[in-house]
Image (cartoon, rainbow, N blue to C red; front, side):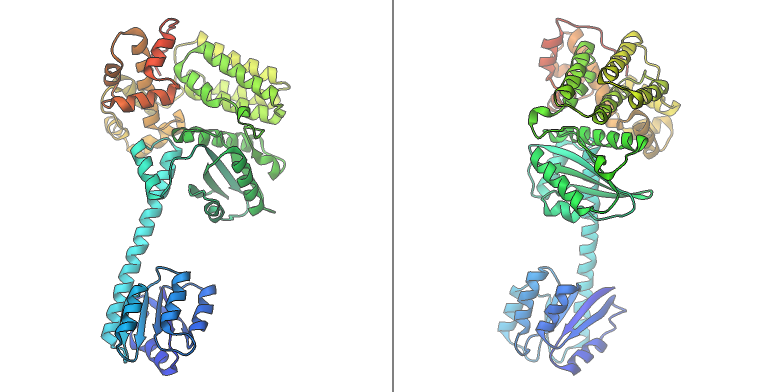
Length: 499
């Protein structure tokens, strides 16, 4: 039911307007009548309405002056103005202020009803537009977080929000236990438009993609703490990334940290503000992305070198034992996701090892032991269900074709939404992420084992657009195809050709 306020200095006119048309049948409710413009303004400072109908000639403040002030409060509110006589100047001023219509007293019932019906139609259209816009916004942010958005979609999305690409992004996850304080207004007030809120079982979760440098992020998180003062909450910070395309990595790190915290629990809310970079200096950042790219390339010496580098950084920056455990957990989950040959037993054993470890050296040695297991057992023993195994087999066989989740689901005679959810749950990657990684692995092999031109390699593995192939290769490897070939051709070792 839409809300209407009627303003006129004549009591009988107000009563007549309340009765002249069937407001409720038309979807409206008269929630306020005012005999003075100031009374109407005072009401609008506390309440909201959907339609204002006001007389033009009133003492102290005219209807036109009222409309001007209302426009400061609500620029788009539908307004109808009334007058006891027709005067062009009133009509002109009203139109300039964006009123929806001008009615001459005595008000014609049919004319008023038609105007109200038209306004209702416009209000419904606006609601549908806003609903569609909100759904579109949430869909785009979710696709961004899950690495399912392409460059054109992302740039169009930014343009619609009148934004440009930022120099740094960090994902923040806030879980509230017994309350649901809305953090969206706080984020928007601090020029952070990328916010999604969920109701998850008994908790409320907010995901924010923060745009800004480290010092700004720290200040923003302090503001969240202030907003949630007295509440039970967890704040998890993902890794800061400089490329919008790597935001999904920050999201994955934050999700895994949250999983780790929920698995072992926490004593106090303040201890739940987990930050992977413990100082404000840029050099203090741990090189997770470099480690991930080394895993993607499959160069075991480089993987171990990056692993050693991260533990060395943690020593230099004096990470607490708890944060060392956090980081070890994140490193292990990256390895576990990349190498499906590792089974559930290894996963459980690692969690226990992290929980009971007494030194950083012990944790580092355990991860190196896992990497040795991978080297000693190159054959992949999938830990996936039969359905996901079948999907992976199709990808491995037909990666060069125009594959999609829908075509694979049809081949397997299952619902595509169900397959997509199961695939993401078991592989920890979306279908498109997995397909791209398989294709890039094939590209790595071709670059090191053939003399084919780079563009031809891209076409052979399923990329019809050379620019997209170059971009995807660099995104996953940290090197262009040319740089990769030059770096590894001399010291080529056998890459695992199967996912």
